[in-house]
Image 1: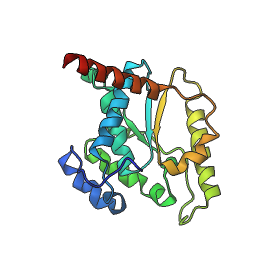
Image 2: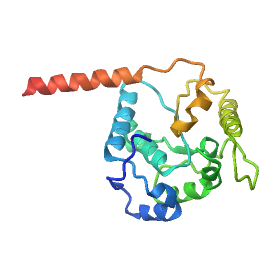
Image 3: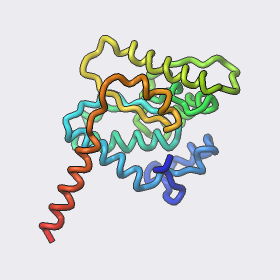
Length: 205
């Protein structure tokens, strides 16, 4: 959450007040303009690196969904309209708390109304028991683990899928030991590209 700031308002979709009215807790924390641009740049460099992103999955959070949308905008920025097919799969299983889980369907409906590219058909990968007001750290780990297992099982017969998942940093300990494959060194590519861009500007001056 270090990326977020309350200094910058949303830049798009004038009807986002609907979202703010429905989620007062998140409304107090605005994604910063810098964070949106960084994620958008990450999306474009992901495409430039030849990484074929097939799915964008996101926890039910105003900030994270907004950043996921920025990633897609960057990733598809050089594509024709007919080729812009990525949609955000809002998954309650990756909620940072049980309270967020219970509002994920309402949040999803609101983002659809506001014109975001939301996958309407995607169903959350984990079903929490009804009327569960508290969740222990152990139960949270179980929820995240079962969510990942469900996603893997769902796409087990697919090849060449690359998923980008947006979730709160508090869930990192729960997923760290589940990731078996080494991470792609995309950040190094991004840094290199930024350096090359700076050098080009110096030469032009």
